[in-house]
Amino acid sequence: MPRVSEEHLERRRQQILDAAQLCFARKGFHETSMQDVFAESQMSAGAVYRYFTSKNEIIGALVSHTMGPLRERLAEIIRTETPPPPAEVIRLLTTEIVKRSGPDGPLRLAPQAWALALVSHEAAVPVRTALASMRELWLEYAERLCETGWLPPGTDPGVIAKTIIGLLPGFILQHLLLEDVEPDDFARGLEVMLPGPPHHPR
Image 1 (cartoon, rainbow, N blue to C red):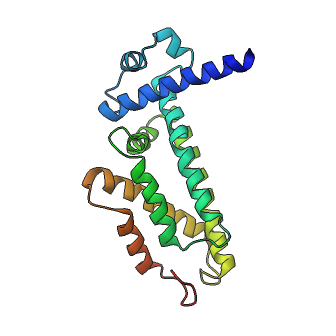
Image 2: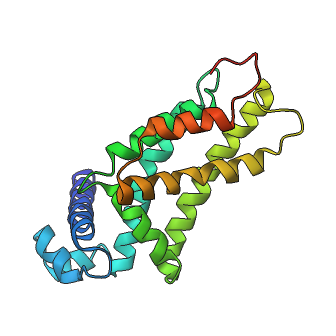
Image 3: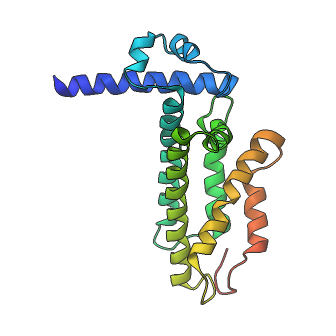
């Protein structure tokens, strides 16, 4: 019985998150009210507040829920026996971003979450946590590139991690706002900027 109860609670929590994601994607964080979430989830105020105490708490949960699969995909890409070159990693990861940023896609909420994190401590905590965990994976990848000789001796992996993670927000913003950028664009650009040593095929 406890296990069934836990599964039920998780389903209800996910129901709220799914409803909130749709509301935020349509109207934005600021224009969406908790009443909108109640109506979309078809749950009472009391039921929703049993799981989340505020709209910002829902946003924080959505950030964690959204970034988890992206982190898992990045980890899968970089932890192959031979790490792929940066252009290929970016191509694969931005392809995943495109899949998750359709009209109701969770990654459409990312820019809103970044802006909110600048003014709300409650929202900033999960955003910072997600960003730091992604950067840790990029650091792991940069260290592997150093070990395999893809990057020149003396390269600081931390600097590479901080730099390459900056490509992703730029891709997301261009994809959502300008609608004229594709994963291959970033990959081809990176191949020119980071061609790697001659003995390493692209």
